[in-house]
Image (cartoon, rainbow, N blue to C red; front, side, top):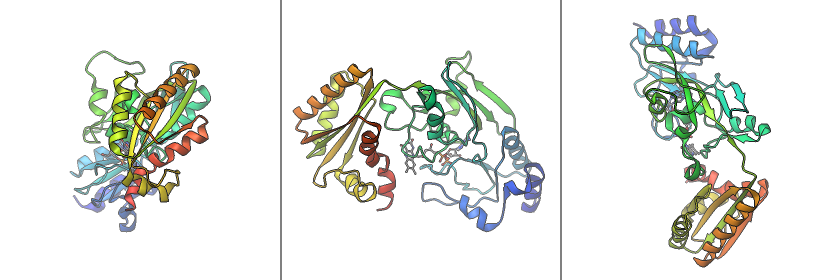
Length: 331
Ligand SMILES: Cc1cc2nc3c(=O)[nH]c(=O)nc-3n(C[C@H](O)[C@H](O)[C@H](O)COP(=O)(O)OP(=O)(O)OC[C@H]3O[C@@H](n4cnc5c(N)ncnc54)[C@H](O)[C@@H]3O)c2cc1C
């Protein structure tokens, strides 16, 4: 069948405005966060699962592949249509369908931006834990496909630990629900199969996520060391004491050199490595953990320890780490 027939079928089903096929429009969808390229034959932006299923069935009828796409920040090339076909973009599917604060779950569409879930949950004292550094831009559908994690996955795990159920569209255009609103639903863990499958098994059209209570107190420490070896010893010592901080991240000198002119996080230019350590819990408990971590770092020759208690101070300490990948991309 001809490309023009594919486009006409998609336009008739999804609406002319939501089917892109002009060369200048398609160019925008030929890449993601990686360096590869691949031009689609058409791009569709459905508004719901029914639209996704229809687009999948039309592509199937025309024997062309489909590629799901969220925000296009992926670093494994999964959103690139390397064999052409139809790119199905979820940016219009960006509604938070339900936020059940009592049961600490939210049902969201795949195009919802990661950070927007925590923003919506914040008035209820809740948040969504997986926090990839791209969380201001990446979509929850992309997070599910990539099993995304972030600095806090040391303690809280990755996306798979926070997804209870999924609505998906299969390769033959069926809409199915997997899992549910509770953990450990009976039967095979098909939700777990889809999480991390990089868009190869199904297109996710709704996600049921688990929300966590915000801790009473959070303290961020920045340990500044002369060398990576000292910082690494501090990591081993902290874990060796049986502590599991909420986050424990290291940056070496090369990363800091890239980050500093970009983010101005205030890292000393002559430091060999910094450790970002976050502890949380009840107020007294968090303080106790922070004191223990600080004393380990001092014993292992940290030359300085900065402590962030307020949200503003903590954001400043984290700014460098969160901007690290973007900063390295400029080199
Ligand atoms: C600056 C920067 C920092 C980053 N930091 C991190 C980090 O800390 N941790 C981390 O894990 N990743 C990180 N990433 C990578 C990326 O942001 C994540 O993989 C994110 O989950 C991708 O989401 P996306 O919406 O951009 O997905 P896209 O790039 O659009 O797609 C990624 C994959 O998901 C599939 N997909 C998208 N939507 C769906 C859907 N609805 N159903 C099925 N499959 C779908 C696509 O086909 C593709 O295979 C970073 C990227 C950048 C650019």
